[in-house]
Image (cartoon, rainbow, N blue to C red; front, side, top):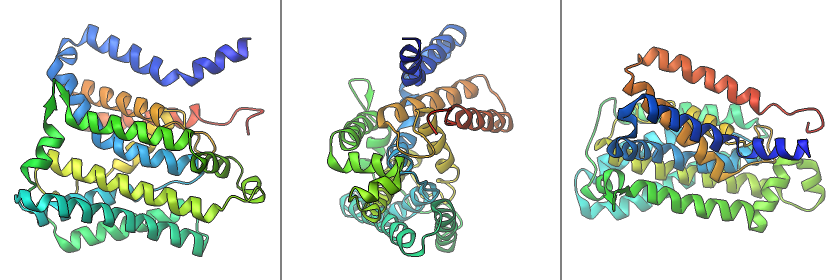
Length: 312
């Protein structure tokens, strides 16, 4: 009985942390509970939320993707330069950017299957390649986004940010795909025990290809949202986003070793990080101290997700 209750607490730990943290912040920092500030928190969380959805699929499959931040940054630069304020260019550029994200994810998956490299090493290399491509293209802000993208990223409907609504729809689709489809069952099985999954007839190569394509597409979507928020193609826009996404996913209870993950709880991790960041900004904590605090959160998240005896 005690073990069942403890597992229930562990299962909902991110929501307990988020709820208690938000309540404490609202009580002691009045500016935090301002409706406009809370809406701003949701807008800030939207980009990371989209990235975390894709990263949840990757990590649940027992892998990791460090290239997503630079994919988002590449999309910010290219979409801003190509649209350059022309609303008519929005739809074709959005489709093209999604294809770019899917293409990079496909390359990651093919290289992983062909070269048998560790995904950490492979995607770290891809991250450097994309970053080099960005700075070869431009080393300064370039172009500007359309009013349509800006409205999606910064607008609201009945007081709810449009970007938050879009993320909620993606979370619903991601949750159903991971928990209610054959693909989701195979992905979890492949992440939990690759050898057993292979013996059961599950194609690990297809799973790897699929999750990296999903990761690339969600990174491109995040880049489009980020471009709308920034309004221009800032070449450093994607720096560090991959680490934040991984931390959010791990805080949400997804096992770094694979085989266990939840898109919904990953969003809980995203909201927790967004609230912490917003609170530190309201308290005017220095950027350097914020980096220190973020590092502690990374270590804590990893420690929490260490496999216990009987689970390894």
